[in-house]
Amino acid sequence: MLLFLVATLAGWVDTIAGGGGLITIPTMLILGIPPSVALATNKLQGSSGTLVASLYFIRKGIVNLNNSKLLLFTTFIGSVLGGRMLLFINSEVLRGVIPILLILMGLYFLFSQNIGIVDRKPRISYISFSVFVAPILGFYDGFFGPGTGTFMTLAFVSLCGYNLSKSTANAKILNFTSNFSALIYFVFFGEIYWKIGIFMIAGQIIGSSIAAKMILEKGTALIRPVVVSVCFLMSAKLLFEFLKSQFF
Image 1 (cartoon, one colour):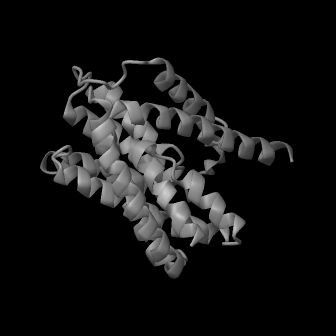
Image 2: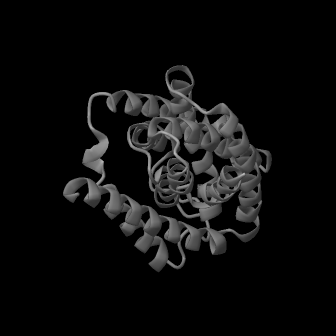
């Protein structure tokens, strides 16, 4: 029941700003679930939340799936490569860098009062975004992960010129794509607590559904403060873990 409620909250937060794992993974670890199993089970329940949100945005016409095929393909490939690279390079090298980037991103959203209110002229074409940016975002999610949804949203706002609601919606389908590639690996080669995962999926579906509707109704007024809060919370958590690993 606790994990169901946690997953509901995480689904709400993740759909709006990303960073749902900031809530679910520590909770599973506190309850005594082994780290590798917690990561695998989290990917299962988290993927369900991004799928539900993606389908909602597609059904509402915010995301055009037919026009996103190249984008999804390159994101998937990037995520697969990132997961493979993780086998050869220690992701610890990013633990000291990513929190700084998240803080800067949080400050950017905090002080940019007019960010993402309306669509703006794109800085790069859809083809360029699909070929050069999407694979990097997918690679990062496969290789390291924290803050991926937020990075994706910022990429759509700053490079494609989308408003914040549209950027968040498109970020969800990219996030699901990169999550799905990792989930395939965990299903075949990892250990998932399926019983726990099913209860958490139910929570994710509820939280993600509520958040997706709120995004379309409230837009920037809702997304900005949640993104800022999540950025600062994630950076604090990652910095704490990095410093603890270095000095304790």
